[in-house]
Length: 231
Ligand code: C5P
Image (cartoon, rainbow, N blue to C red; front, top):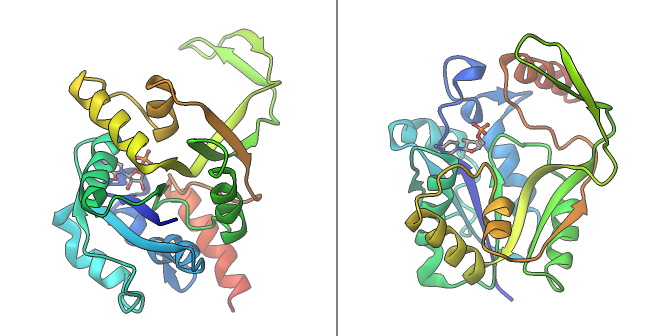
């Protein structure tokens, strides 16, 4: 079976300040290069495409320097105004190649473990859609805009979604095209698009530490930790 990967990296990432976070380095290597490296470690993956904002193409080229000789990494694709639109752009670019499976990953999760990606791929033998996730361990409080607690929510059965998320390619492309055609632009992950389209979706327990780098504080903490480890 053929497996393709879309790494979405077209966000402006302004919460981390300045240059979009996926192009910034933590430790010695750019966040994007780390995210790509996890997939490149798996020989089963045959094609990888990044979705970028063309305004940052030079930054993209710099970030992938050293990885560009992996022939599986193809030319980048221009993203859209939302994450959902960026994923659809990636799917349309892959459509001529019609892979069996597609994995969608946020560039902002550079710590994903290849072993977890392999587990996700294994699960896709039995289901058309699956995502890495971890069980919610915190007690969940529902609060109003003033921070007053309205109630405590049961956490059993709740999982926090991560990426990558994997799908039968044709099913996800169809779901995304339909969502766009029906004006649905509010999905924050691809599993939600698949759920909306009626596909069965499974959670797969990931490895600890698959953090999403969102704020400048996240980036600085990851950088400090890696500088110690890679010293
Ligand atoms: O903004 P957020 O952290 O939710 O973005 C998740 C991922 O989606 C990031 O890797 C970001 O680069 C990507 N993204 C995108 N196109 C957008 C918005 C976000 O590719 N328009």
